[in-house]
Length: 437
Image (cartoon, rainbow, N blue to C red; front, side):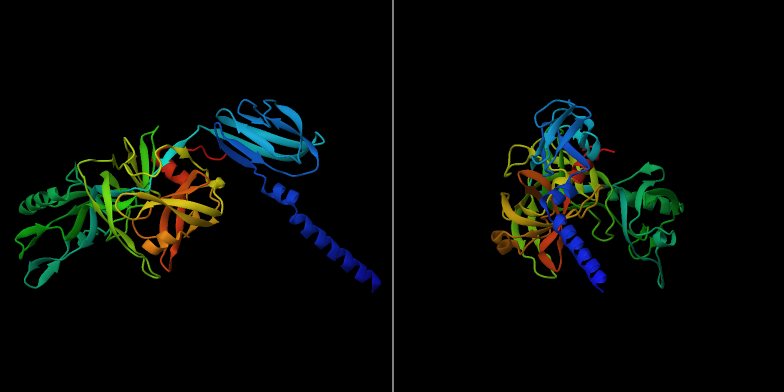
């Protein structure tokens, strides 16, 4: 019995010491010490192990990074003190720590990429996007006799969400040109040869127009559209590259909810005239008007899961920040206070406090990178939280742009999702090199 009690006591003591060690500073520093690290050129980084031992640090290429201000390949350091890295030129290298000069302790792969700064936005913009073809948004019935209605499009197995990119061998993305082609084919009693894009796959379809006895015209039996318009928020402008990113989410057709494939488009000035406040179960929205349409801010070249992207020659007026600020890698984003830049009245960009309450660790692009909560009483009073039209508002933390607002939680409009700025930059054509492999 005594032996069993002794074993149980020893076991409990071991558990106690393991638990004690796990919450100790050295253990936590060791557990969070990175295996991979990305830095911009000229950026510094401080690492901490807080171990009461000395170690030999070896840098694969000291021209890429220096350690504790020493451009040496190998030297001794005390692990009780912070390890200070500074990146000097682009490239990949390794940093190795060995205790007693032989026993491997940690190896860090370091990837240094060219320095990048962007100007955070927040301005409300008007968005006018033209698709790369004719979007099919529904079917309708054509009265071909007093008691007979058909939909030639539906009979030809054309689906809602399909994109018609060619008619009779000619590229088409203008709805106004379709009627003449349909009437000509109908009068000749010939089918139209269509090229359809569905799920990124192209295929051909023949569609014979039907004569509508009520409208006295030939019809396809399809509802079609070639463009969309709305308002959103500019996220960033990269002056060195002349590109911008906005919205933080894909633009979809309002009827089919399928992403619009960009053929052409523009972003223009917009003015917020009022706010419809958010309530639980009912997201609000910015009421805005597009104006000065002749003064185009930029074009639209891409419409992706992370927003719209294109070329822009200069930052719009009324911004909160005129000079570029640093960009944060996804792994630098942390839980805690941050700010968003957005417009709630007119064109003036304002700063509002938020809290980043959850960060998802992502090695590959995904839209839900962080959960944010509006904490600023002024914004809560004005909007009730996140409203439609606020998507794309840049998120700033510790002086760096970390991401953009993307979606609101319908049942809690004070909270929503944000995406990492890294993925938006990638879709804009500015590639931040992936983690060292």
